[in-house]
Image 1 (cartoon, rainbow, N blue to C red):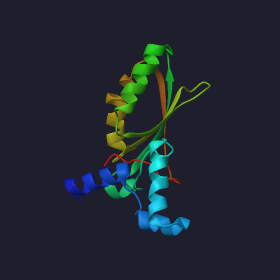
Image 2: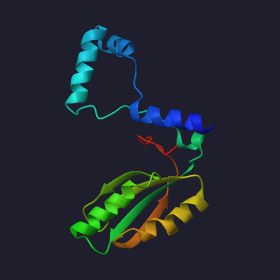
Image 3: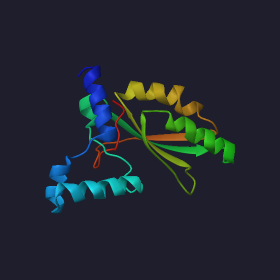
Image 4: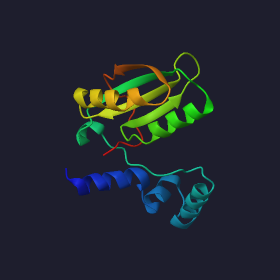
Length: 150
């Protein structure tokens, strides 16, 4: 797989979609009303985008970790900066802010354990306000992420 293949995958994850003709056949309409409805759903924000489902292992990202993060500060500026920096990390393919003892759950993809360790040491541990990070290795993915950093 070369850089062009990776760019194609990246673009498909962001804007890939089924043809209007095929979609129209699936919903039992002609193409024109199907396109009109799609455009309305897009304009209203109901449809936020179109994505290709990429197998992380087939693009060299066979290691996955679930990361639990506790912050020592939960003031507005710390939370905003933490979330901004997490959002900039393509390896973090999913993240949620939680109620309870754990402040954040992050899903991280990496090529292997050593790559994850470097990411943990160089990025995760240096995020603003971090008090404690706990990682667990994923044995099996039951449902794929929306975007894989290819």
